[in-house]
Length: 117
Image (spheres, rainbow, N blue to C red):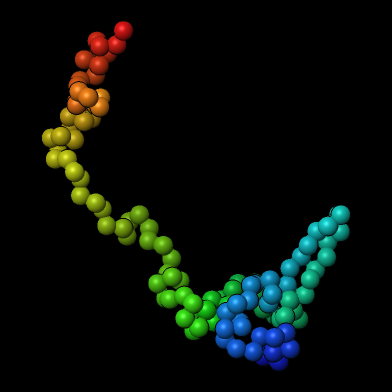
């Protein structure tokens, strides 16, 4: 595997980090109804695209292009801290039952309906 990479100009960790998955695994093109497979550097080895992606990301980590935090999955809604509400519980109830207009503040829905032409 290392010989194949070296033959294709991938001789350092930085070289591997600069590769795309297609460079290692190859790709398929469709043109004029014809499908053509372009060989990657590691074509012929039993390596999946996911394994090629993992190799490239590990090289990017070793080269210092990314950090462990960059590779961590994004936080889910449950893991994110909840922001405290700006309004007290009482104000929240008022907001639920009332409408707000920019100049007049909170008004009941009945008052908003009565003010309509």
